[in-house]
Length: 239
Figure 1: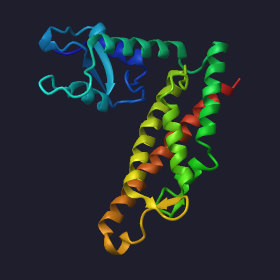
Figure 2 (figure 1 turned 90 degrees about the horizontal axis):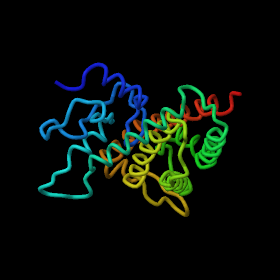
Figure 3 (figure 1 turned 45 degrees about the horizontal axis):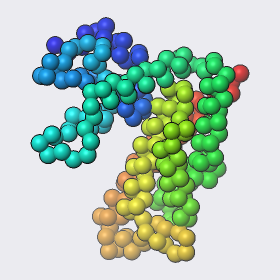
């Protein structure tokens, strides 16, 4: 059968259509997971329902107990992740943060994010150069790494669910970009790196692949960032 219409609607509203594990905003790309599987006696109930993005749903489902690798999500852990996220969505109160203490915390997080992802240097480079316009300073790579490290800190979190969802999505895409830089770029002189020039003659297919990967991902990163900054300004500084 599956979850009924009332439970589906209640769950999607409670999570704000964000994934309860990674917190990114999913829109229509969201699935409702049975925390306790139906084959194991799990019910089609609100308490047994967990909204997840496609990636997290696959991650939760792929664990093989016959060949264990890593740590499986427990039912109680999944419920705690869900309840914590539902509470964050509830605290956000829709479009505005009204509690002054929460507002100040989110302003501090927003200002820290702006410092780490400077729109005039790092983010401008990502938008305009996209790693395919020649060599770039090592600092660009290091600045992305610093942001990703900061994202692992518990205090670097927005109380507002919409802002936290966008930050989580930006983090995921910067992780992908970080991997592409490691894969496709190499030292290009003192304190710089880039796609090797010799690939144009020796490995044209590898060059095309690098350009294609960067060209697809960098506009997504830029859009993530700009959406987050614009929403943060409206929510945190409008009054």
